[in-house]
Length: 238
Image 1: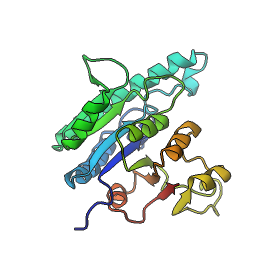
Image 2: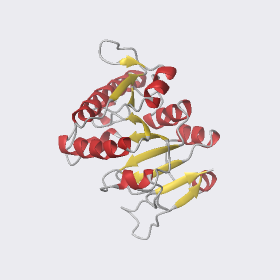
Image 3: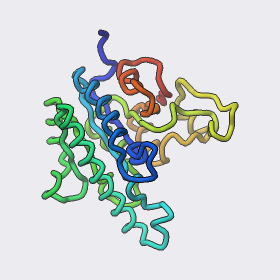
C-alpha cells in the first residue's frame, strides 16, 4: 500500500454531518460510519486532530437563537460542540481508537482544557485529538477554530468535511451547469466569491499558507482517498 500524502491533518466536521437523515441530534449509524473512516486513517499512522461543530444541537445564528444575546447564543453553540466531541470520542473508543477531547472552555469535570503542548504530545503518541468549544470566544465560527487549531498544531492541511463533494462555481442545487473545481487558489476563490469557509477562517489559512481540502464526508472511502492524495474533492491552495 502506498504511503499517506500527509503526516498530520486537521479534520473539520460540521455538526450537521452527524445528523445523517435526522432533523437534529446525532444519528448513531452516521457517527459509526464516520468513526470507521477515521479509524482506518489512524491505523496508517496519520496524526489526526478534529474540530467539530454544534449545528445539529444548537447554532448561535439559527432562528432558535433569535432575540438572544449573540454572545450567549454562541456560548450555547460551543457547549453543543462539547456534546458532539464526547459522542465522537466515545464512538472511537468502541472501535479501538484512543481519543482525547480538549475544550477551549474550562469544564474540567467533563473534558480536559485545551493546552497546546499537551495536544501536540497526544498527536505524537498517535491519539486522535478532538477540539471542542470552538475558539472559546463568541462571534467566531468552528471554521475559524479549525483554521486556528490547524495552525497551532502545525497540520499540513485542513480537511473540511461537508455534505457537498467539493467547491463549485455556483450552488449545484440551484445551477445544473455549476462546475466542480479540482483545485483553486485562495486568490481565485476570493475573486469569484466562493464560500469555502467563513472570511476569518479563510484569511487565516491563506496567511498561514495552510491548504484546505473540501470533500464530502458522506461518500464512502472519501476521507481515505483524500489522505492518500488521490483526486477527491477540491484543493484550495496558495
